[in-house]
Image (tube, rainbow, N blue to C red; front, side, top):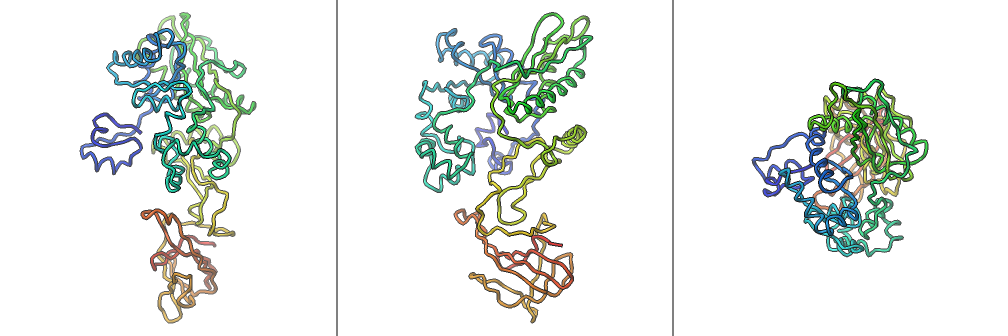
Length: 473
């Protein structure tokens, strides 16, 4: 997720596998991510910038903020002066920082890595020499590089209609980014207050727990309103009105990805940061009078599956239980099943952690040449089971490069399931995947075997060895 300057100096990079990072830096210290601690630690920096440089910011994630530059740049004398002032303001908090300015949030974040200012209207030319990896779509990047397209500019030069036909919605979204277009320009003004949800505390709330509970209930009501209207918000502003007349607010990036529980957690962490900084004194006659959740930058909802069971809404008790299990056992402890693309039965199912978006790059619809047809197996083994397929003489049955069997199968033995005589079979069917990648290429053949004990198996042979991949009955 992130690495320190010392780790980067040793060759560690963002999104690198832990083992690879440890091989580059023997003294690397790996810690679990604590999002709540990140929010609390980053909040003073955001508040400092709001008070000294620009009044309203959007927190994309802890460590990354965005804001419209037009107004503040005029106040500070230009975009270069604004960028210098932002870096200096964070330097006052002993925080290293870099600032970038561009027409879109994506390009500005990329420009901030090197502290550059992209000229107005010059995003496409500025992005052109960058490698395709900056677009953040690994599968698309890999495919394009095999086609000889290795830079953002080369990808942007492709005809839009051809990109849509060949690479689908994900490809056309990356293509728009490569051309310097942005579907959701940064705008911290609310589109409308029609969907704002507010909770008034009577009497005034002096503890944070009731406010967090109200934030979750308000977030659920807000999501229901947005769903009924068929829209989704890009950002969410949480506003707290205090008894002494002051108002505190914070904007979060939402884009339909935050559940009601996630919204409540972010509100709690920001409230705690404000309390630690002395801005939120709930003692005595002070306290919280009102909490408001205001959606911003509304756009048409394109569909999102956040439930555990089908299209229905996740029951409250299931969501609460899942969150508790994830808190105790880890984020991967509770998952839901999503269909995906692939040829074998195990490839067509993905397990997605509860609360996450399904970001699987392989669509379930075809074409998938060599896909196993219906009926599908009843049991797919997490790990292949060793098997032996022998002929009438007891010799192992083999499959040639032209998919010819060495002899008719007579008996099948599967580890842990005994052996039985073969009653019938179908196949073999060849499967050749990732042939262009030496490390990931796989050449196998599948067969369906029915035995006299009433069982039916899906077998797979690879490098001359048989495995049981699934069971039909």
